[in-house]
Length: 426
Image (tube, rainbow, N blue to C red):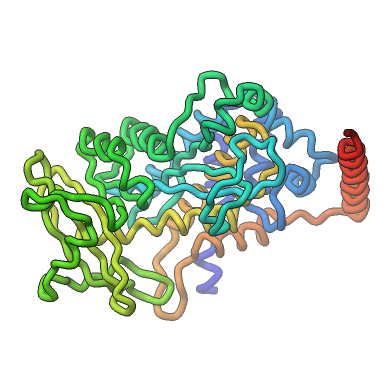
């Protein structure tokens, strides 16, 4: 009974309905509004692949057309819903959080999906045919979630080919922007929207961009951004490679701090820091992290508008991994990468609804009581499993199951015939 007392599916579904009512005015008609509700419920369900076909089957529809129209042609503003997601996350997790920027890859076949090309993606750990999305996460002691997204469009293979852009529905006003520039736009939008965040963190792609650092300093936002050991920094009037400067740190100047909790407990490292760029207003440091086992070094360029203790910089550097956890949860729990759309609009719409589903799970997890020695608190994956099993499971009739089997096989046969005809043409 004590276990069951901490699980309240009725309250969960009330919370879900409140969230969907919050975004209802973003849809001009009731049909796409209902489709969006069913779409997000499908993302929270336990179906294996969360594409339009399977989501429509989960919702009890006779075909995928309703879900496909929701992503392709229905009248609703994905950016406005994104703003609602951002405010919802801040409302439920807010409290001096940290903004985290990072990108993730979406492996694709073919060449017609917006932004796809052969490029390096950490998802595969190598160069693959993929799309890359740049994301902004918000992390506080209460939880973390994704609050913004941008699709990266390569300049040469896409923006230089206007015909290709038009076929993928890329708006004509979209101009080339680097990943750090996309991150800067998202951070500025979050701060303008009143998101309570004193710090920003990200990996080397963002730490080595002077434009992003200048924006953050102009906004008086502190940052702890990873950099390469070869990046030059100015210390006591001399320009150094970050790695060369770290080599001069005496053993007595290394301090042992935890970078936060990991799956197996505290993540302990040795840390050292030194002031850099003292001729400029504000406070800047080079922060160095040393692995206690391997001795491997990592480097961070840091800024704060006022004096800051080392422990604070360490905390911000350690929380960067929250965005990786958000990607893992979004892909594993709510199908962030399960879409089968090619257009610019379709990508942003699916990603936004997946972020909405993830924000809902994060809000529920933040509202749960703390765990104890006998039982952990409810996590987002466990809440989603319980929600799927207790609320979202549909018991389908045999006729419905056979209808969808027939539908899939018929359309797969049509697709195969079209592929063969196209390949047979000279």
